[in-house]
Structures are given as structure tokens and as C-alpha cells.
Length: 104
Image (cartoon, rainbow, N blue to C red; front, side, top):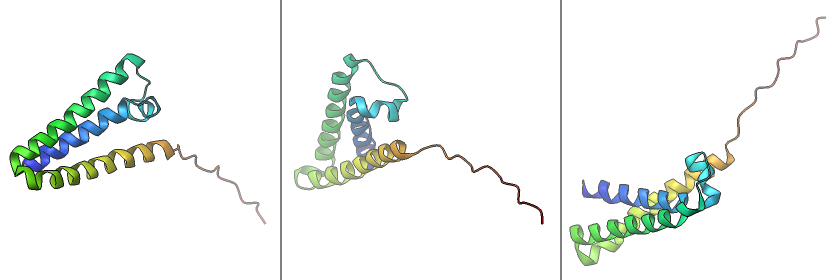
């Protein structure tokens, strides 16, 4: 259960960090946020990632915690990057018009 909570914290932290960047706001939030939101979102992302790291230290001790946190944060970052890549490259598919075959 603690692994799920650490992973969700890492996912939320990377989401906040991506949402703080103006070039990713359109893909994530479907709109551009005012510039005054960029810094609080980045701080929130760093805070949630730090919370996940502290939580893993408390749960698993000082020797194993960095490895577990890096594993969870790597998977969470790959999910966010994959989502951003998919949304940036996804274009609406237009169906080709049907052509009538000439009758013989």
C-alpha cells in the first residue's frame, strides 16, 4: 500500500512540474494558465516529490529508500512524458472520402 502512495505522490509531483511549464499546459489542462501559477505549481511539484522521498525513508529506511523512490519516480516520469508525447503527436484522423468506382 505504501508503494502505491509513493507512486501517486511521484505522479502528482511530475504532473505539477509539467503543468508549471507553459508549453505543456495546453496538453495537460487544455488551456494556458496565467503566469502567476507557474511558480506555485513548480513548488508544489517539488514539495510533493520531497514528500514521497521522506515517506519512503520513513517506510523503508535510509539504505533502501532512495532506490525505491527512484524506481517509482522513474515510472511516474515516464508516464507523464509518454502522455505528453502522445497528446502532442495525436492529430484527429480524417477519413478518406469514398470514391465511386466507374461502372464498366
